[in-house]
Amino acid sequence: MTFEKSKWMELPREIYAGHDVLKNIGSMCRRFGFGDYAFIVTGEKTYDIAGEKVKEILEKSKFTVDVIKTGIANSRNVEIVREKAQEVNFLVGVGGGSKIDIAKKASYDLGIPFISVPTNAAHDGIASPRASIRDNGTSISMEAQEPMGIVADTGIIIQAPYRYLAAGAADVIANITAIKDWELAHKLRNEKFSTTAYGIAKYSAEAIVDNADLIKPNLEESAWIVVKAIIVSGMAMSIANSSRPGSGSEHLFAHALEKIAPGKALHGEMVGVGTIMMMYLHGGDWKHIRDTLKKIGAPTTARELGVEEEDIISALTMAHTIRDRYTILGVRGLTREAAEKLAKITGVIGR
Image (cartoon, rainbow, N blue to C red; front, side, top):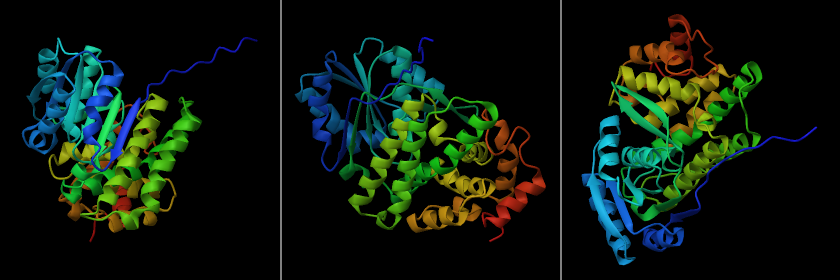
């Protein structure tokens, strides 16, 4: 019998993470053999924080550089970037999650390389082949360009409000329930499964949990711990060619809550709260998850998220409808009674 199994994956070729690594972006792009025309996707604030510096470094490396300052990650802004970047050789996303999502989706549509330069570490999108694009009040996870290079300067990232770093840590911790959902779908629905991606996703989450005592405000080592875990988590998704290693029932809950109460909390903050409750449904040590999030300084209750208790219950009952992905929530989801009981038992509401 002929062995015919095959697999394709795309991973970053070079990653710089740590103090003062931004200076390496020019030489890295030259090694990649890109053409001379670079296009930076950034925002008003993030241009001042890092975008202008990236432009100067690339220009010193003899690149022609154009810049667009854009807003939220929605289809319209992706379209604008795509239209303006028709003649460029590569895109550089400089900013938080929205600017990087716009750049990676536009580069995917254009079929050109993408470099990720995060200015905060609020979620694992800085290294993943997925983009969260918001339309009609809902964020949709879309296939996007894997970054060919990542330059995560912890000296810049630590300057962002600590809330963002705590949210990024929570987003990686969510891998713990995401891989449980993935394994469940593999067993019950014969969904494709990668033990390698599973192991890497688990490792990245454990790296956060095991080092939670070191994740504190105004400590650059904290940014180093979270950024490394985020990058590894993103690579797990690349290996799986799916967001499965980092997105399960906890993300379905978060997307539902964002739809119900938009703008109230960061993505990673909502995901962290969802992870507590989904860990309970999986029969795991949800208290350890809760206590780790508390130690890091991430929200664990509706009040800390800034949402109403009714919003939590509604999001729990809606979560299974967000996308066609089998999780511990099943195909019918939770009844209102079950959702209320779950939220109360885990302390998300009723405090």
